[in-house]
Length: 314
Image (cartoon, one colour):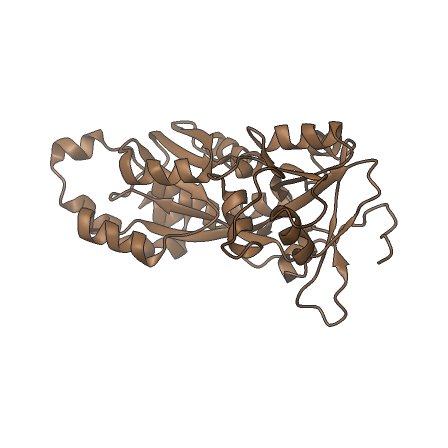
């Protein structure tokens, strides 16, 4: 009843959880957390850390008896937690489950975890603030990552083979081809990528937009004093302009490196994890994504941001 009052649209989505919970013993029920109460562990792709930290902060402020312990790690590690770790209740990553993964759960667990998209993010191409470079096509990025051009210009990710950023680029830019590992380097996390680019004039970094795209966040403003975001050529626009990542261009997908933020919940009762996903999906959580200059899946007006700089000529 508590959840129904908070999120009236979520009734049908929770029917499965209600049915499953009815099959548990009274002893098991007492051990469960409940909506707004208890403690759970979740695993989150590190590239989404700033906005998910804010979501947890606001949820816990609303429900003081709830504690959500987030572990920020590469996306592949989040999925390992989903498969093998009975402690992890929820993961937040850049994709949903594929057919093979859903079949695994059906065949081995007799259920399929619920999952959904809650917002749009983007992968940002970063440059040193003093760099004269500023314009990229997807083909240029592909050729550089394959080591076929501009081999002197190092490309730095938030990991080599396990992060959501790496997987997204492998799928959407390299189309299954491999990195040239003499060109592509790995930092430990997104902040280390930003620090490396700030200290290295002739390098390229790739990070999630949520780490650097909020013009109202003091920490992100300070990061943008050290680095700058490159323009990437729109692949769906008639005149093929070069576009900078911002909320408006992510919403329209004129900026081509757009990806989703998804939750996948490993919970078979009506518990704290289910309640938190409801928070993310509906108005309060969606407004937090919007205030972070990401794109919520719930329809709001998208803010156009004036950037006080001259757009480079093609």
